[in-house]
Length: 428
Image (cartoon, rainbow, N blue to C red; front, side):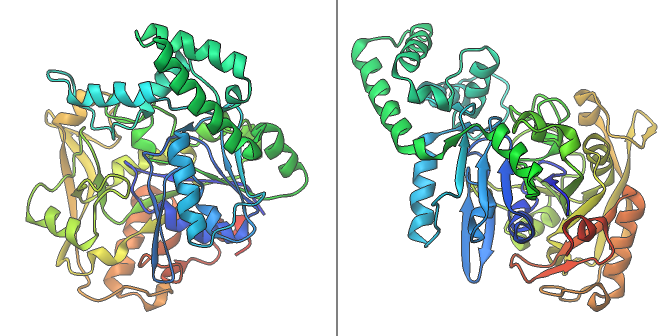
């Protein structure tokens, strides 16, 4: 039984919520390692659609412990709202939710700064959610951030808050007292959840407990390895699990990438296989491609093998979970991007220079569609022959197995591929 990382392969929104929810049945702990409440993991439980933002998806499985790591930036108001909403649905949090004392806090001035950047004219538009995530990470790297644990020490928190308000010209006594009092109260409310996550996780692993490390966003939004600067502000790749939770790489025994049967992205930035036409609009409609957190329409395009190979290499992925296969059921022809053309040169690896990516034209290979309903099929043998050929070709292009194929949003609408690394990792 292994400890594994589950993360997005492309630009996020790949359906990680369902996959984490499904596989959390086979582990003891689900630990989120980066991002903020800009993430949206959607899970269908029976007929109920549940969207999670900060709390690990394992919270929907009875008895599973859920950890928010130090690599996450936490909007405490949003966290408490999410806890309350889930409690109304009957979800129990007693001794199940744990938060790192080293996680950084999103403060009101972070939200204001983010909103101001979104509204400013003449600036490069990244396409963020404007929720204060970027500015909170900026303060963290500038060594000015406020950590969750600071809220339990009034003197220390007051000193740090004053420095931050002074730096922003907001140190008026009334404003200081208002923010100070509110966040000290937040600290009291979340105190039962606060622990040293690194110590807890390593002790748990030593005692034989199984951990699923949950990423947010996706590889191509990683601040180091994504389409910079059109990225998030944290490390969404597998390395982020180590830094974002305080566990060594030898503790992780597998990496599962989650990828759609086609491609989407939200926000600005290069997207070589984007379909800004009727086909792209149809994929958006059939796949209900709107952001779980913001409702923003997602840009849609064909499957891009170069992006996936890039993510496989960076993360050391050995298995993939392919989602939303059923969205392609009505396509007569399906295209796979197998390379890029740039200045009369054929590229077979994703370029590191964003200006090159912006000039690339995709090279496609066409395959016939299956024009048959695959929704809810849960065995490879029951899939149409053309569907199986599509899945086989993806594995050939990427050089990595498919361990799981999702044929719908529900837990049971899934094909678990026996003898895969995924099933061996989790003893499924």
